[in-house]
Length: 165
View 1 (cartoon, helix red, strand yellow):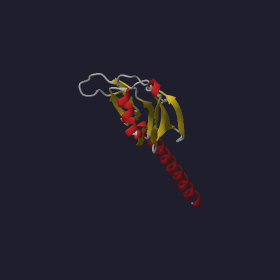
View 2 (tube, helix red, strand yellow; view 1 turned 30 degrees about the vertical axis):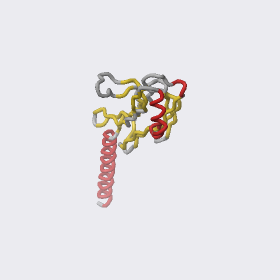
View 3 (cartoon, helix red, strand yellow; view 1 turned 135 degrees about the vertical axis):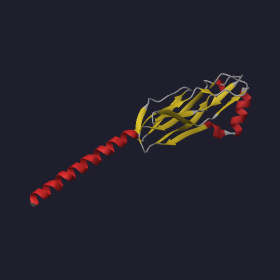
View 4 (cartoon, one colour; view 1 turned 90 degrees about the vertical axis):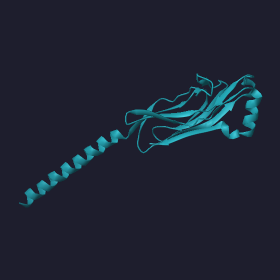
């Protein structure tokens, strides 16, 4: 009788362990997020405009982002329109992209300058694609106007976007 009772307890323990493992695996699928980091190449139209404005190609980015392993990846001297390869992460995960904007003064155009660092984190949550971004963009009518602005706002040469999933 003791052996039968122990056998029943052993079988029940195995079933409970198997059932709880199965639940854990099914929940982890719900917490998987596809992610992609990008530096947008255009900014939203301003008042009176209908088309997005392209970020001037004279700007370059030195940036870092957090990859699927949670490690920091550094990327240097990329232009507007840069994108990292998409990857998947499991929750909890903090997606982050940050960096600095660089430029060579001799490459700045004399006419209108569209300046900015617009880092975007695209992710899919519950089947819906979403994004978060730090909008750091401005339009200037001349090179001197841009240089005066940067001289008084050097913090605009930095950007960061972050989201906890």
